[in-house]
Image (tube, rainbow, N blue to C red; front, side):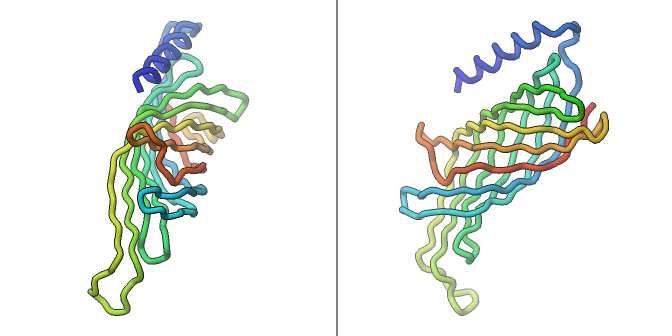
Length: 196
């Protein structure tokens, strides 16, 4: 974690030192995104195999430093429904987002990483009883924190100087005690950003 922070700071200093204009802060942006994707893998403590499309929402706010660098924060919630009976695996995470971007006409491709943390909540229920208010047997609930390492690549489309549409793909790594937890997989984000 410390090594990634040092790398991000060094990258920030290198990019900002090459800016032709002496102003370091060039503006800011922020907005909301919805996402889905494909997650799969085994929840090892209970040997449960997952596969499905998560759905979620979140947002980002960033400062533009120099001509090609942004730094800020982002946070998301993502729910992967399971078994069709109200069971789910839910991730909530956020952290410091840094990326490098380039402008080519109305397109603005970017690549970056978010480093932070979050929590994973798992609720897996057995068969749903046929009567209301009856207990559900074989229910498993677990909630634990994790370190988040989330590389991403994306592209903005400039609608106007003040508004962009964005499309992004990420691959969230959730690390608990130094080990990757499952399920994992790519998520695709779509949303809007306001620029100033």
